[in-house]
Length: 142
Image 1 (tube, rainbow, N blue to C red):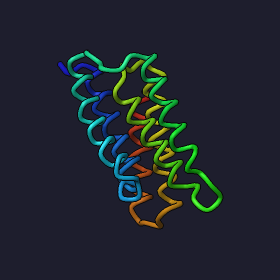
Image 2 (cartoon, rainbow, N blue to C red; image 1 turned 60 degrees about the vertical axis):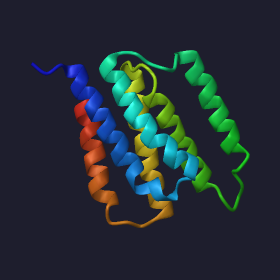
Image 3 (cartoon, helix red, strand yellow; image 1 turned 30 degrees about the vertical axis):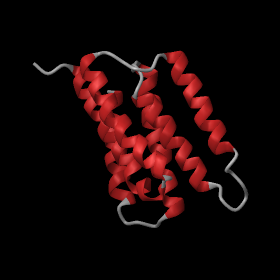
Image 4 (cartoon, rainbow, N blue to C red; image 1 turned 180 degrees about the horizontal axis):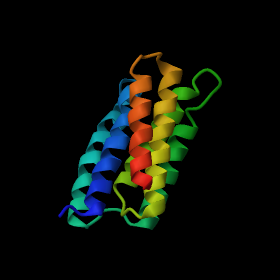
């Protein structure tokens, strides 16, 4: 018998990929390195039930990430720092223990990343990825 929690964890990984995949090439190099590592380590932590980040350390790390990229935001370059923040916050959330609201945060951050992809590129992959993301979120909420 397959546990519902493992299905939800796998669905969370898939939704995260659907959201970040179109913007991955437009992210800064550190973000391009951190996200796949967070995805893999987070999936491993979910399977074992042991997490590296506590809630307090995740909050501090999130504030540091926000502070670093907040200084890069200006009128000429608004989208890319915001996308980097969204993906890094998603990475932090993937590394922590997940409860109901954490899954919702992951789904929302993935949706923001996918929506942000329409600001950097006009790819035809947006619609199929949006359909997959919304379908994954719907099944995740059931």
